[in-house]
Length: 432
Image (cartoon, rainbow, N blue to C red; front, side):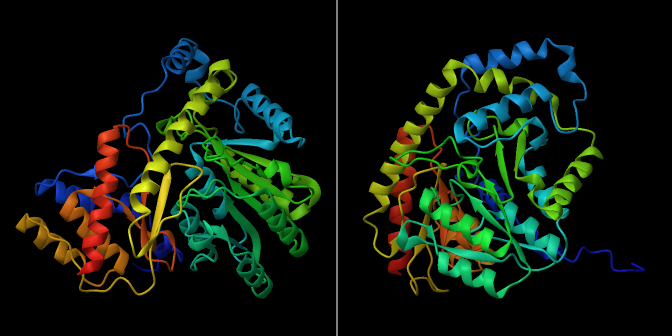
């Protein structure tokens, strides 16, 4: 090309949650049945959508308005419903004008970082959720900056690490929280959140809280939304319907802005995101139209309660099976529907393998494991030997070696098989 047309952050755009699919599909083509544990899609894993939710959507299809454009920020009645709901739940005061809809949170996350000043950085947790870490790193043309979550402390954040990185990196302008966390399933205690808000106020930062899993909490934990602790700090919460309804294919998420006018730069930043959304006209209308009826239905709370109970059982079962495996740290999740397993330091090496009976698959996997991180090596051998498709922890912007698996399998026997097979594979792999 006459000029370099490659974006400065192109190398930061990685998403192995889906990236591993091409590897798994080739293994499947060669004869191995795949058990997809890489992506958080309850519908793909067989969760049925409640008939009453389907009926609400069917009724909305009869209204021609739901086939047309909506306001740029989103349908006003829906935004007012959500603002009233947040005010009632958290005691914060926002209006419909503080809410902006996107075509899924991926769209919203992209705009959050794309329209941030190039020299301003947002520090996020590690292990990191790839959509955030990739988008933030790409906007800056530099590797995402992270604070550590500690597996030996049930994945709680290392606040000393966070403070030191903020103190010695003046480019850091915001703190990202994912609550409940993806990929670890950790739920932030209120005390920890208060300390993080105090840190943001001390250094003049804004806070982003991704709360897409906020209604999937169990094990005695209680979610503390950002709205409850934000005080006078500028903040943004990200929410949506993809994980809890569940309706991931609806691509419907929204941003809630707190204390927009407390700082002129923050206010201008938020307005820039709105202006950028205006260039797209609006987000998809139909999912927005049904949110008040679904979330406001008396059956919705029971729906959420039932799902949380199911995932609590899954978390307990997974913890029971993996808890006895030597050489790993596998904290029990209390939110979302993932579990992250960490291999202890020095346990993995570049010579470990698993037995792959199919010679074609063995040959293919052995070509894929050349010069890859050690945890990815395990994940590829696991895929070839058992068909279980998980995501290596190194793909979550982490120095730790391990992998993430979902708790989504609907069939009890298949779930038990997946986790018992994982336990057996780990034992075999680290014994070689």
